[in-house]
Length: 351
Image (cartoon, rainbow, N blue to C red; front, side):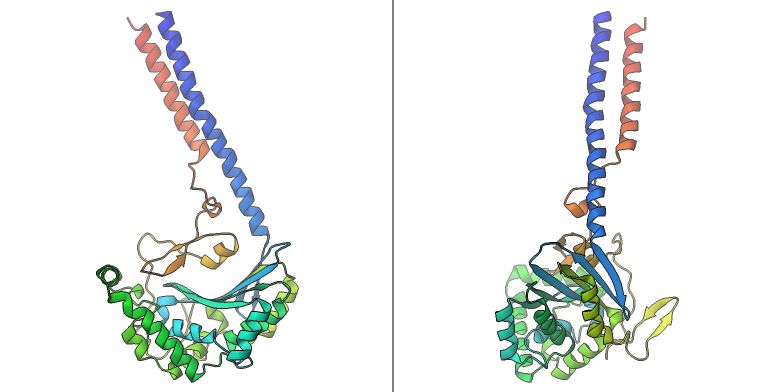
């Protein structure tokens, strides 16, 4: 009887040890993860220039500088008749600008190792810059000019438009891709995501050069923009560059009004029927640009071929899954082990 009792006690202690130690290690690792996130957040500087929020993360010793001008809205900026106008606008803007015609624009990009591109998804779009620290000043001028003063040359517009339409035309060529299109139409019926920000062949065919120019003018207001810069440059110098360029944009187009404490912007022509829709159930509000600047990751978004940056929890920013709270787990396990030991002792010594 005593030998059996000793064996039960030993088994209970082994069980308690095997669960207690991982809980302590989980608590230690979670604290280390929180410290790493806090250290990364200290490197991010945030300032405001005429309503334009700027996030700057300094990477000491980095020889490259990247920047992204985010335009909020995505699918909410378009409807079924002009879907794709934003993607077309950004694509044409990367071809040439007022002060840098196409040949000069490409020559400057090649000589400085600069890449100016764009991306778009259901929630926002971005005009991005990637360059070296050595040629940052020259590349910044290219980036600003293409953002604020794109040339929108007729030949560039038609060439880019034809290219985008050719790319979209194969969405219904195969059963697999057509199923994806039908699936999106069913899932997002009645929601702004029903309008693919890339557009369709039918909607793009109706977009004119004047539509693109007007859409660009309406989007270039600081209340719609967010600027993110990462690199080893002086924050004060960056702020001066932003003030001299994007800081001169209007905060919002004339006619903007406020309602219930929230800013309401004048909608582009033909978008009067757009209303503020809540996000799908179970989806929390995201701040993709801030999380990307702090080291977040991008995951595929809804719809074929479109990505959306999704922030994760504080621990998930570093690529680790969320862990259970060690204190609560430890208390629950301890109570369970104690009850099991008492039950075993009672069964052993009961007559």
